[in-house]
Amino acid sequence: MKWLLLAAGLYLLKAAAVYGIARLVFRSYVAGRTEAEALRALSTLLAHGYGVTSDILGEFVKKRRKLPRIIGEYKRHIASLGELQRRFPERAVALAVKPSRIGLEVGETAFEASLLEIAACAKEHGVFLWVDAEKLAARDRTVPIVAKVLHATGAQMGMAIQSVHDSSVSLAEKGAYKDGNHSDAAAVRDCFLRIWSVARTFGGKDHTIAAATHDDTLIGELRLADDPRLEVQMLYGIRMKLQEELRLKGARMHVYVPWGTYRNAYGFLFRRMREGASPSALKLFLRNIRESREMRQKLQLSP
Figure 1 (cartoon, rainbow, N blue to C red):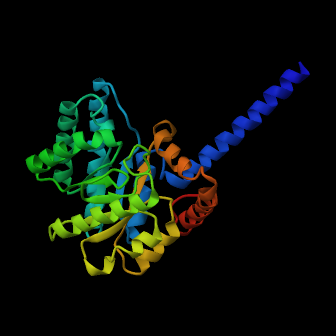
Figure 2: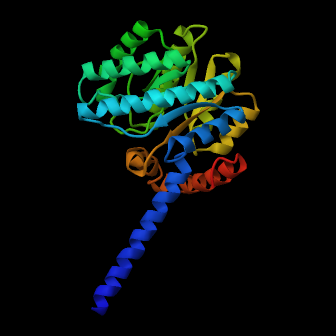
Figure 3: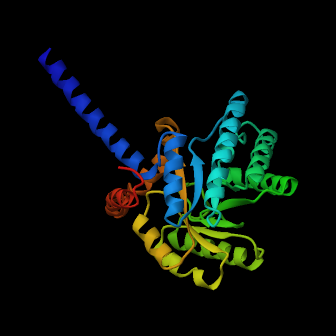
């Protein structure tokens, strides 16, 4: 009995440690569990001079019957984002949607119908709509549907393309998925800069061309001051001191703000933790956790 109690005690200690680490990572990278918490964070960032993209966490929805509830949640949230856009007309307020959450796992027809409904709502409320990058297999199915919905609705839309995936356009991002054509860091960097160059060359004068990266060396190569269309996008909670430094230097800074339940945050947080899992990245990962807490307190975002 004594040994059973000891084993149970050790198990509970380990579980508490894991739970504590999970909560720490959640607080560092997620703006809140509820829409009200997320809207407070979004409003605070806008007041400090950042553009924002709201991301309701969750992905890989495989059952059609779940889609109406999810689409309804997006449409209600878009109305709230529209109010923020009216309060901060000089800032960019956007919503991000994941194809796998709004029907791509069910089928392309379901995805297109969902995206049409969300895009029409976003247009009505004056909210920009970003379609997130996901795994390589989804990209070639997603791009033509996004283009079709863009032309059908006239909504303000953009699509993220990861530079771990060869070729393509618009929001260039380095990417946290591991299924890409490129695994070598130099190849990823070259692909990123190639996408960036294509977007700058062929993007319209009223388009936003965004680079989603936390690499300050790479950011230095983007020549942001040369073109008012250019902006840098970073994740909430990651390299927040660099975000503030760039903003104070005059760069257009945009923060991608995830929020949602612990359950829905799993995939997103797993990718963040995996990025810090290698020995070379662990020091940076731990530094970022500390820096995130300091900057959240400074900006009065959360404890």
